[in-house]
Length: 350
Image (cartoon, rainbow, N blue to C red; front, side):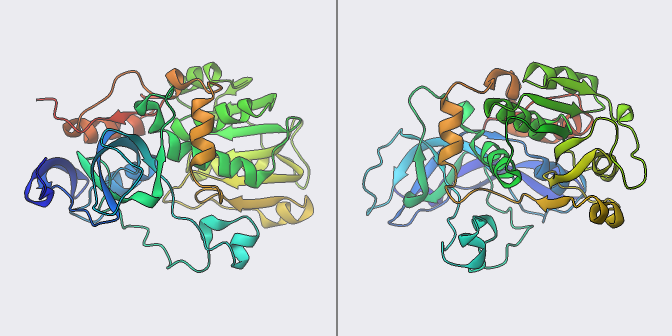
């Protein structure tokens, strides 16, 4: 790498429109005096990436991918405390700590931030190099592989959703969707000592993986019963995490919620579910959304990953893919063929 990194090129998986991704040669990002240049080690494919590409929401020219870890490749002139080769993740942007949202523990929606551009994924990590402010770096613990550290961002989301729901070990919990988000939520729940976690998932491979990562019971969606009017099903749940993003799954899951139960929307989807507000009123249920992370950012997630209490070998698919394999792998994920998190390395298969 030369001092003028911006004159060099790198491979990147670029969304070009109409549901297509191409590998292109893009300039390596330039860094300022307080920035670092990071070489991406692994980047996970997120459900958001699937929606942006396969449902054609992404802006042409975008490089997606936001679940990643890497190593320091270069440092700005005013950066101290970071050496070349240090393994890192880039922490979330903190809230102000003073607004109504932040003081209520909801810094993910800090009121003093600019409203998010939900399609601004133009500088993702399906590429070789990323630039980041040095102040936002977190060092990966020595005993945690860099590949596993790429799970930090989705683990932070799982922790945030569980903390918002105020889950206790005695709760009976339903997780709908046994994809990467649902599996990670299930594993984190079990690490918190929750004894009764049921996962609903249509794909057989994902049902098997959900049981392996800690679900006490695994069911197909058609095994969930419709609730009688104004009353719970025979074996209701105190808390539901809807991780699939499918409207039908959310509607069915709402039927499973008990009196004074809490329903957490975690997975995103294009078709909104129908909500029986009369049922929510009569049973005094709480419906909340989990958007991003707790005020502590990524640090608790990184510590949990390094603790050894999560089955990382089951949460991450065993075979990594390359930049030119991102699009076909997205189709396989959508079909439910791959249960765990797929990691992308910034290389070409050919």
